[in-house]
Image 1 (cartoon, rainbow, N blue to C red):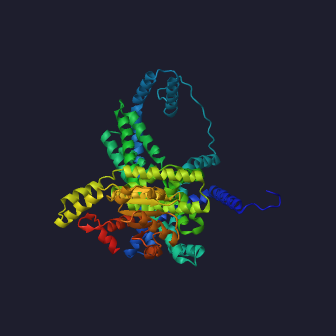
Image 2: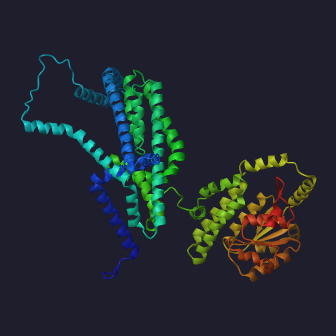
Image 3: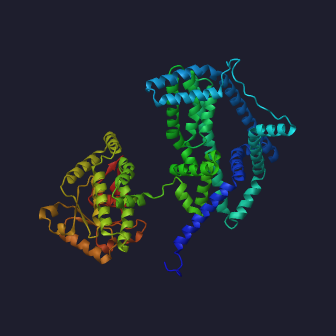
Length: 623
């Protein structure tokens, strides 16, 4: 780029976004002492808002409802601290009795592993134990350490401050969080109105919808987290009690609390229980059962319960949640682990309701980034039809493959046709697309279609068919046993054979034997082959002129005078203008979809597909 030239707009935009991101990261890091308590207070206000609203419905003033909600919360926290401290104190009195078990197990492990470097590990542990719990059996001759203590008032005040700092600092932060929470709960409506005025006074509906959406998602997310983690802790405590681990309530509580930190929380929660199970039991059964317990309960909770209850309530992509959790933990430390999910949820809500931030929902949300049609097209271009085949399985199971072709495959082919017309799709990509699509259709043809068709066959046998229906079925079977009932003639466009193969599969699934041929093959066919044809389907992916389509129909009638002619132009089904051209095209039917073509084929051939007494041909004519 020359010195006087301006940088491209895209480059400037990227540089701007990088600068904004770095600036936000710097602000979040430098202002963490204020933003962290504010974020925790906001989450706490979301959790306590239902309680405040319930007290207001009972007739209590808002100030009294806020005070009562905070009092209940503080009492619950105090009760929890009292329970945990009592359990910790009880466990501390038990631990010295387990030192012999620990020593014996570590010694046995050292011997089993062959000594060597493990003996150094054993020595480190023993040295640490002596540091933590020095021997009380020191003899009279043991050297005594003399410490000179300054007893001046200033020194005593500094010592008292240093001793009280680890306790006073968390208490001060907790008090700040409670003050912020009380303010947010008491001024909720006023803050909401100011936020609406600041963000979107000219679009109050959208702003209100964004605020309500954020409140619902965060509220559901917190409720689901509390419910699942409490259940997780209860199950763990009950199972640990059954195993015989001391203080099971403590470890169940710690395990449930640790799960509020995504992904790493379970590792933090399992460590104390495993250590105590290792210490108190002379054998290894308690340790192994405890490990198996956490693996089983976390597996069921994370893989079964959480995706059903929590995954849908947050609206977050699992991969995005992993990345954002690491980012928030990097910015705010352990607190970032706790607030990662709700804060990321707020970003997704912003992306959903603010057009300029739509990329946030794409990056972080759990909605599929590509539609089924876009996924089909992309996978075909990549030469990997497996994902598209997985999309087709639900249609196959219910015997609706024609719907899949209409809703997904043909839409993708129309998109490919646009790219071909613009010259964006080169020959190699087009060849790969054609080969992948042919492979997909061949795989779907080979599929059995699951249990739904067999179920329909059983129901059909169990249903009472009238004698006329039985005779019609016999006549239909006689016609279907002909070798070439339907001839599908496709055009010269590279995508025409693909659409013709899809139509052939759909007709075969309806019991209509079909064959795909080119116009040259149709003209060179023998007289016997032409006489066996009862229906000619002309397939075109490219919108052609009326004159061209009319000439193709006339040529088909000349080749197979005894056959019906149906023209299939795979254009947008919403375009109704093509239906009005049937008379001008001088054909027996003109369709734009695979399902519509199958129903029209049955009607033109005078066949009926009966299922529970319904006539597919009659319904097609009514449509």
